[in-house]
Amino acid sequence: MGKFFEGLKPCYCDSSAALYLSDTFEALEKMLSEKVDMIFADPPYFLSNDGITCSAGKAVSVNKGDWDKIESVEEKHDFNRRWIKMCHRILKPNGTIWISGTLHNIYSVGLALEQEGFKIINNITWQKTNPPPNLACRCFTHSTETILWAQKTDKSARHYFNYELMKDLNGGKQMKDVWTGALTPSTEKRFGKHPTQKPVYLADIKWKIWWKAI
Image (tube, rainbow, N blue to C red; front, side, top):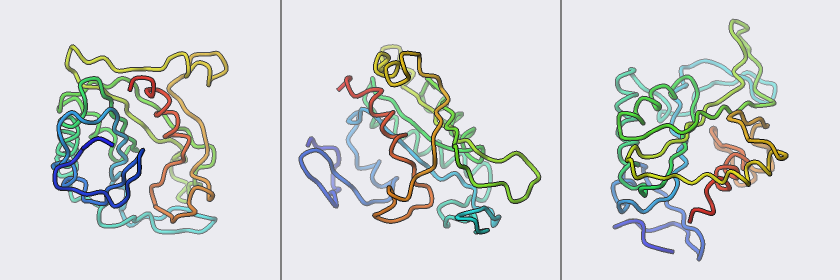
């Protein structure tokens, strides 16, 4: 594999992949400029507000950890602008970035993208077929997440979109910006459970969209 970092060693590496265990900001600072074709970021949603949700039929806390808490709207937006700006530096001229989120954070993320030199290509809605029920019964059940797909605003930037493959995967019809599927199955959690884990099929679609571009 090529060199991506200065002063950071992977915790696992083979001929096709490398894993790094590090603070995100520290890793981004050590990454070489314009080395990345695609970024998939799943930042904190900042929804840990001492409320409750439903998991496996039981009422549980929504709190994920201190990393998912923020003191103010201003602090949240400063956080998003900081890491998105760093992603802009490491992304190749024709590269793209995918960022997932919910109403708690995604609007700040969208604004930060535009402020830091990105153009949003698509606003993908991930519609969950088996969302947790709404215990409060005071609003609609939260059953979707947003995934923003963006490229650099440079006029010379040309992102790749594997249109024909996406059409084939969608039964010969153009694939729309609403993707429907279930939450992460237990079979994908056999190595441990993370509170924000995404199902493999979401990553698989993103990979297939641009894989011929490399």
